[in-house]
Image (cartoon, rainbow over all chains, first blue to last red; front, side, top):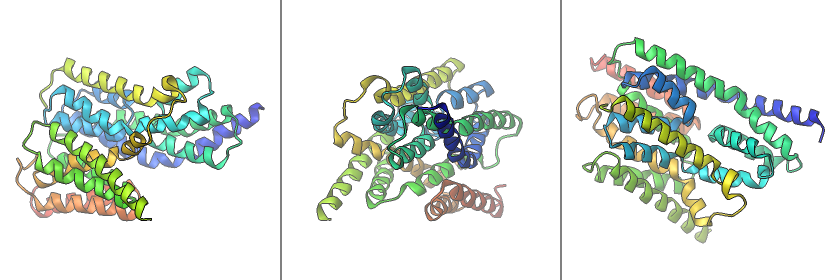
Length: 235
Length: 111
């Protein structure tokens, strides 16, 4: 495998990852602003974005912190949002499982929605790519996104610590969540899961922060699979 | 928010480690062993199972109004979801919801 192919794969990835900057920039900026507005230190807000590096989970944890949920539930809320990445990790194994350990360890850190979706589509479309070209492509996709993600969190955190409270910012987090959910409602099963989640969460709203949500999430996942299975049978 | 500094750092650290381990799991440790298909199916629904349940009470009973229903925020929520759904892109939801929110807050004298 020549190094040019690997290089080409990297730059293809870079090109395919670049448009995601449009999403990463406002999300991370807002996380920075809301994080410091909510009472996190600038350093904590930046550390959040650098170490957790997962938009939905960061906002979920932040929201639970705003509700003063117990620490365990804050973590659990963020973790549950990220559980889908178990699936990402598993489905990458056939393609890059043979890569050196350090590469897999680094890819795991960069394994979020955009890099995963772009890479897995590439691997499926071009099954003849070498393992080296595949990992290069993955790093290529991550290259434009990650610096923007971290950089705009830093900017947001600094801006957020400078502007006063009360600009309707409390409601930006719900709007972000709804904006993330919209495109996910691809099938009847996804819609069933979302509706179940809403109904159960509202029914259990009296329970301590975080507990009702976990029950709602479990019910919703089951509802999604049930609807999916029923649809397959009737098809 | 009423956590001590240490508690916040603990939350960040534990969430970071857990998230990394989730991403690393199969790729790094478990290898080729397949997960039961049912588990894979359940996992596919995690974002759509968690986020709506988290957001619903906030839409009906916003924190900023001490839990009093606010039409401005509810309409903004509707626009955010609708914009993202129709546009098939979160950016559209953020734009639609953001405009609706600030227009609504302004018109109801909350801004």
